[in-house]
Image 1 (cartoon, rainbow, N blue to C red):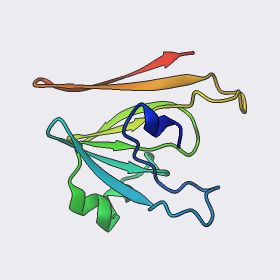
Image 2 (tube, rainbow, N blue to C red):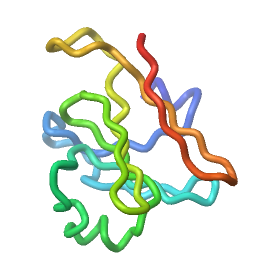
Image 3 (spheres, helix red, strand yellow):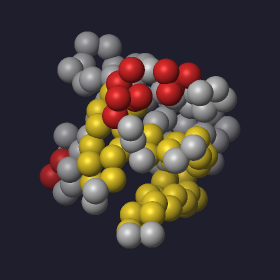
Image 4 (cartoon, helix red, strand yellow):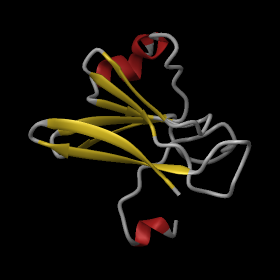
Length: 114
């Protein structure tokens, strides 16, 4: 991928990625914090907690997408973060990108309009 030329990339399989070698869930540790990356998580219920890979990972942050609608929510000690999307205008959603910042005090999240 072109992005890998400038940054480390962690990718997961999305609903349109048939046949790709991506996994459904990835776990990454950055700055001593554990991030779970997954395409789809339903924040309207705690179902994601029942999913074995997510439960076992005990993440600090779950990063997900699917609907492209930005989201910052907390479920207990876990930050649920959907960054939005920065690609070609789709649907009736505004284009936004997400920023996660980590330091000794914790993890903060924000969305920036493009």
